[in-house]
Length: 292
Image (cartoon, rainbow, N blue to C red):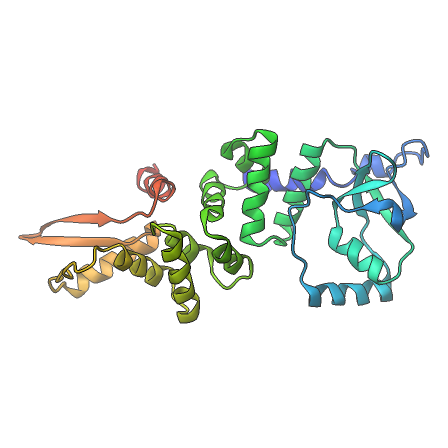
């Protein structure tokens, strides 16, 4: 059975290029779907979800284009006032400019601003070109500017709703902490855990501690829990637990993806405590527990 998520992504990228029947159609100059145009007639999109371009990778691509030419066409749409606006391929367009190309091959796809943004977002997601903050800003753009819901965004980009919602939550972080995530210095799991702190100052201080100490998600969650304790609160003394109980806790945590604790009361009785950081994490846990 075809994975519906992969199918959704496939539809997004397929929409960027002409189908086989379109490509083999008679070369009707009037349609001009695929042709070569002056590179100066191609303009970047102000709404490209990708904001950062890795300089060493751009230099490498420039050298490749200088040696072999631009092997993949740019995807564009007609621009009001003349020329074309990029839908996909800004990195290649930048490298082609650096390589001194005067002309580039383009595929023209007539699309609304909303459709063009969705196609650009999907194309970047498939190539893993976006950092988590760029992903979150792309999702937020679809919600704020085009009236999408998180559920609709998830369907359009082929991701789970919980993934979209958790990614959007990163935008609640202070700007310096978002920068750490964008740079890859603060992983998403640790960043989301920091949202459990009450103040911006606490998040900033904890983020620096996580980055400098290389803390894992679990260690970050423990740090947040410790920072949320009232000043002067006496630490709780945990009773000793058997190796079997600790092993079972680890197995449950691997399965559910959240901290789990087994509290024994004696005589074989006890309780299971499942710790979740937010409602989205609770929803994910419940999906696993209630799955038939």
